[in-house]
View (cartoon, rainbow, N blue to C red):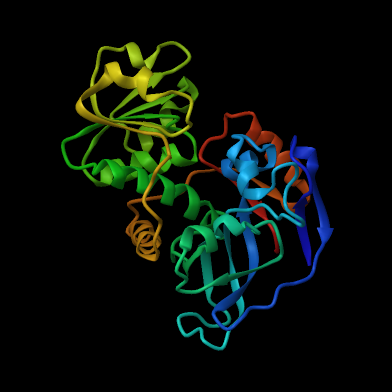
Length: 305
């Protein structure tokens, strides 16, 4: 099968398309024919080995042999293991691939009801109202935003500032915070004001013109979705007992979390934002675009037509 291999750390050009062996599902796995994936910021950070702990997880001096990036996928189940009853061939699904990655390939095996979802992945039937190119844009980004807000115990009447509000995590965080009844201040460039307001933001701050940590306003929660600030910098805008979030030290993702997001999408209370779509053959250009740091929402990768 065709797959993208990351054989060394570095710029987008290190990604190479090659042929690898098609996987075979074991008794507790399903085999997914991958229709689409995403150029997730997590994939680009693994490719760059930035931050350094990436090397501890994926290889100190170079990535582990035949490392195939790709955290999020959507596709059709082609076959199932003998012990799998929850899915059947032909089911359309979306999935988080876990630390095993592997989304940039024509096929991916994933376990069902596994005991370590963050390492081994999560899978669910697709939301019925999403197109194929938008389905893979949900699992990793929306789950990360959800676990952050759960950590803060966000609730009705609270105020939250979201730094990086127009990116994948930020666009989900706005919608989820509004679902929980919070008042949302979105930090992004002026060119993305219309987008974040359409997602429910109550107020916007242009980070190119104003330092959001010096506005004089105070918040119950500050979520640095792009990890470019710090608790120390944000302390002046946090209320007493306010919570600072930056995608670290989160509780484990669960199947119920993914099903909760699926339900919100089907109720039209949550929607993925799709910036661009690339083919698998253009994976280098997709990563190059994400590396610029200005994508709006998500970047999809078409794998199998």
